[in-house]
Length: 495
Image (cartoon, rainbow, N blue to C red; front, side, top):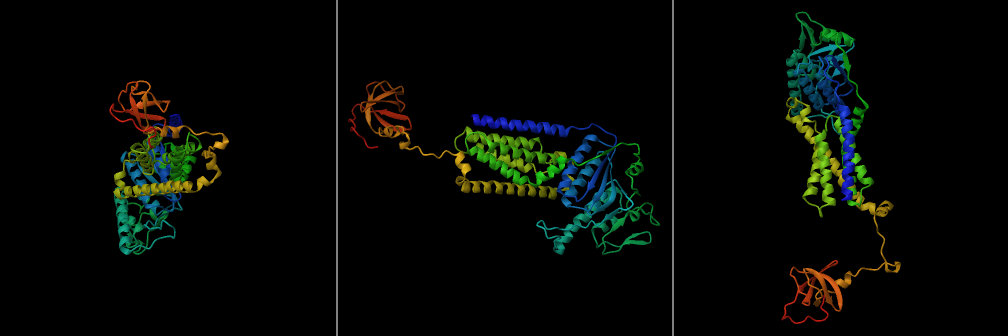
């Protein structure tokens, strides 16, 4: 019981640390009427997505008049791009426009984010385009060569997506299609062929902002400028204050933690398993709790885990503690504890649905991708857990650390140790004697001239009645009354 209480104290201490950390991180700055500038630097990958989630949560708190994405990206993964677009649509649906400032490159996924914006601005040396989807091998080796039918299926989905965004934000749909599909019709503006069939569209800032003869507006971008203040002037917010989002050390730490998430989870549960298998509460228990704390801290910062997941895992640890310290064997409580830990850890790698009001815009296929990723990470964590348990069970008993933890000294008679009288008590089985006191049901009997503390099999046996030993379990001796007409048992019954 003391071990279990110590475990609970450690868990509550770490939860208190979490609460303080999360409260300080979640403190908002209140309502604002300025402009929120979000730099998009480098590839759009899972790490970038973690930063975006925190940035958009800040937008929800600040409620600015507009958001400006300052783009300098070569592109990135389609799933992450789809989620970012869903966040952008969610913000715009609440009356906050989102503009794209290409400074200097918005290629591939960056071009898609630009098409999802309320308007595009470009620096003087900027380029935009080349958004055709490519299948990259997850094991390295570059771009995969897909079957034509599979390639067309993927291309068709992306083509429909960019057409939808162009229609939604009043861009030319043929320009959007020319960026993703080389088999488009000739892209014509005025009398000029901007991009012939068979080529992917890439536009410079001058081409994107040019108004061609016969056209009433620029080909794609609203204006060309190298100063973000001129962008604000163009959208009518020249007097607005600027809040510039910056990636913090916690964001970079969250990227590392989430990358190592399956390893941290597996090692954390393994350390707790070792702790529960050893007496007391010591180093392994602390290590397990710390590893799980790091795991959920990183996933919280990344916008994945919340208080619900942490509470679920904490309940699982408590249930395991109850099963091991208070309930003999291993049953439903232990199984529920393990399920709580696994479910909480699995939920911690899926984006929190209530934080993303536009999940329906992402589509069920992309949510399925996140679930598959969660199952894959759980599989890796379980492999680490069971693999580590097998290695420890096979090699740990041979190490000096194990011998320092386990008492394996033999208690030899020549060293002064004597055995208990268990063997002598077992020899009483089947013997008969007389009740020296009344058994109610405990009392004393006289067998072979020696007194023994016994209990009856449930009946009250009067003093002087004949009895026989029917069971010996440890220090407990059970007797029954002999019938009056029963023959006296032999002096020495066989055991």
